[in-house]
Image 1 (tube, rainbow, N blue to C red):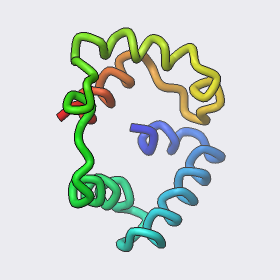
Image 2 (image 1 turned 90 degrees about the horizontal axis):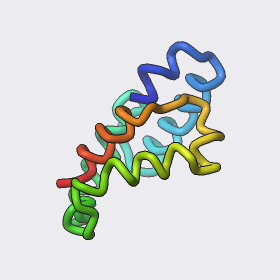
Image 3 (image 1 turned 180 degrees about the vertical axis):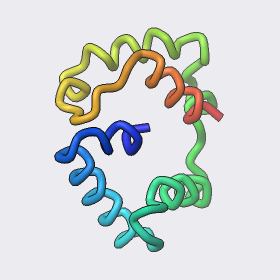
Image 4 (image 1 turned 120 degrees about the vertical axis):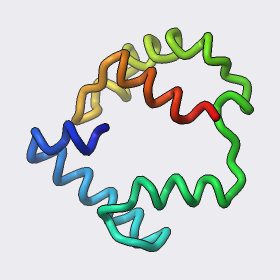
Length: 94
């Protein structure tokens, strides 16, 4: 998601490329597949999804709204919408 939007902003694209390169250096693989490499590492490490950790899907809308108001979100070089955050939460839920 950020990668798709970052391509529209040269500075954001450069920063995302740097982060993906760091992930590849630490976890292995290549920068282009860093998001999947990270997801694979999370599964192998046995980390549970948000639902197992106690965040109910019915709370996702409130969490997304709170995230939109957070100071860390304001510094994100790629703005995310409420719908974007809902999708991210749904992917992190299982």
